[in-house]
Length: 278
Ligand code: C2E
Ligand code: CA
Ligand code: CA
Ligand code: CA
Image (cartoon, rainbow, N blue to C red; front, side, top):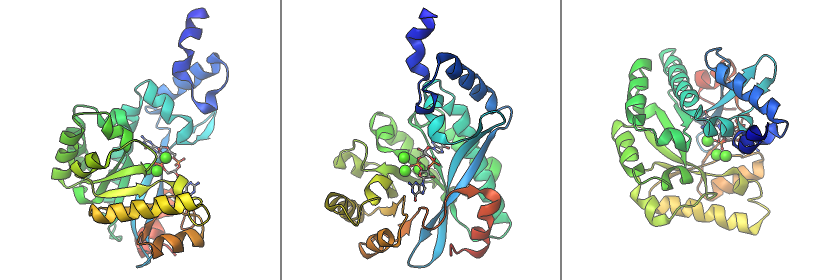
């Protein structure tokens, strides 16, 4: 019991603030989740508020366990990152998202891009570009319809990052920085990376119309994106006031509950069919 106690911190995630026994049980369940096909993807529309069109879908993983229920990613991603399981889980997510988007396109819907979250550990896998190339080939999705979301810390930590990013970029995949503004990144670094898009973190969007600091930060990010020739999208848009502020300041691409919460593929289909989010 003592020995177990020593290593308990490894298994700690917010939801599992319980006994080490329970944590281990959850870890064991998570280990079997892939083979038992317990993961599912939800999709949240990314929209352009000027054209009224849907431009993309962010794939967000959920874990559907018969005993625990529907587990949100915040409850198991950090555990999966600590024990390395994020690598096979992330590979499943990538393949499933590409498969789904390819299917939507073959069904004749409006072509949209699918955005997949990559955790730092996946990003640092030696064979990442090979894997991505293989998945695109298998699923017959054109690279331009895949977007990878990486965090600032994910790329800043690693010296090889630029090589990996260049290889992905060369393949024609879009690269965006998730949670922009929350991590550590030097602007000179940012300029060196072959990025396509900055995603303004929802923590800045939340009070953007009421908090002067957030107003300034969001305006600065939009201005910076423009001068670095990057696209910009805001996440966590919940109110019309936030939408209007962002649009008036030059950020027309958005994602958030105001448009739709993340939904299962079946429910997402009407967005693809109509090409509109309203
Ligand atoms: P994220 O990548 O920043 O994703 C955005 C999160 O904000 C999602 O939570 C989404 O449901 C939520 N959200 C969307 N619109 C709104 C809104 O208007 N207001 C608010 N308050 N929240 C909104 P979700 O799906 O629970 O995912 C949480 C985090 O888990 C993600 O944050 C991402 O870091 C991670 N995650 C999800 N799927 C994956 C995955 O396949 N791989 C990896 N590595 N991480 C994932
Ligand atoms: Ca994301
Ligand atoms: Ca985010
Ligand atoms: Ca986040």
